[in-house]
Image 1: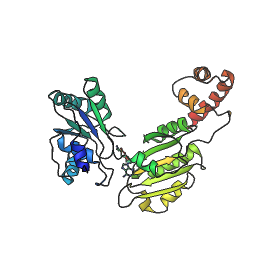
Image 2: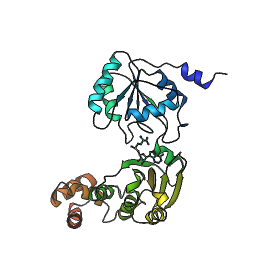
Image 3: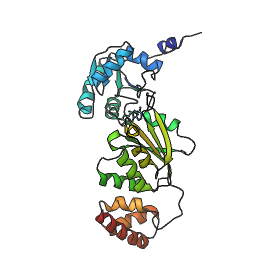
Image 4: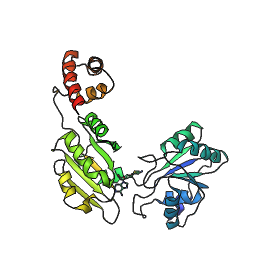
Length: 294
Ligand code: SAM
């Protein structure tokens, strides 16, 4: 029988291609055979943090020249990567953890390489969003990945308002120092009834998955300092099906009101939703006042 490593070995890996390679989100064993094969085959690794990646690769017995590609240099790094690809190299793009481009650098590099007419080959693997969702349960019926919310309270509240009526589950990433604040913001924006999954330190020693309601979330986290440590994915149940209530278009109106007058916001919302312009105008007036007070 063909060994699995021989299967990866026997496949075709074009030269001059960018390989987007998922790495583990905490557990070094969570890497695919194909990822290891491509990392070993690559001429160069484009990495978010070259030291981190060197340490990770050392665990697999791999050492390669690297190109740093982070938030602040993605464009210039892309030029270097493209030059090497044009010389016929294979380059693997990795981030610090999980899948590049998912709340991580990588997406702009992918754009640039594709615009240069060169192939981009994705190698699937770990990602915190999918790992959390796989253990969430049937109350998650479709989802929208939001990632990190804005750090500033006002912007965060404003983004959450636009999501308040979203019918699908919402997935957020959060860091330990903001986890309590963020669960409180979710409670304020969506009310206490919806289900919440707090997925912490996935695939690691202190992994925990706690399901509760939004009302219970912040108190549960505050009940033990250990519950606030590590990396988090939050999954929030989608909005219950609502009748066309007077607040049906609040999210849209609130967003429009950030840039437009009450009159213009009502006019555009009426065009987009088909609802009465007068009703929307009355509602926008009230929302406008509420936004001013916040
Ligand atoms: N690209 C990564 C992915 O595919 O999941 C995400 C990178 S993003 C910069 C880091 C965030 O992902 C963390 O702040 C946390 O919200 C989430 N995350 C990463 N690893 C995690 C883990 N092991 N457990 C829970 N959340 C994790």
